[in-house]
Length: 238
View (tube, rainbow, N blue to C red):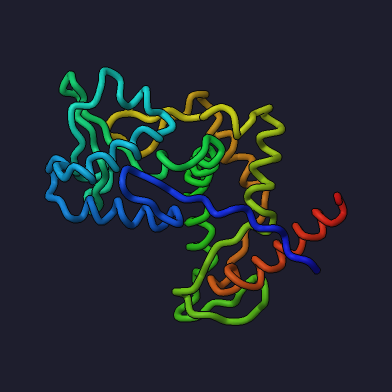
């Protein structure tokens, strides 16, 4: 069976720096944050330009910048005291934070990220319930093989993307066009623009079965199986 054609690799450029992948860029900006004390302004000219260009790509740039940016600095992430993130001080003295993901993802990517965050509680609850009585090992719902509990991973029997596609169709939402959330200053979690949408998705998501598998199964066998299904679908459409 022929493999799917690969898309051209994207190069990420910020000021004088360029990166072959999103992960490489994320690591670079993480190193900038870790190299500064809390509250410190980014004074290195090359770094300041790179962070400014990163911020200009923020999907809510106008809402974040408002009256203009006075300085970029590093501080604790909202609601996450053990991590740091980039912050801006506006010309009027107000401040807000911003993250790497919102600067490099598409509208569709951020919408999907928000929907995944909604169901995190359901997934953790399923995992805890499924592991009741397990001491060191658990049996995979996919293969029946036993694995250390440290390798336990919750997998959707029906792809999460398929679940989300069905929900979007029922709600008449175009995930790629309109950002469904709005960020708030100094707050990690975004606010949903339409009240009730998040709770409706939680109820919808509960209809679909979850299963406990090993991380290795999820990264190898299950992924290959899903890729084979996609290849067949593409071949049938050709």
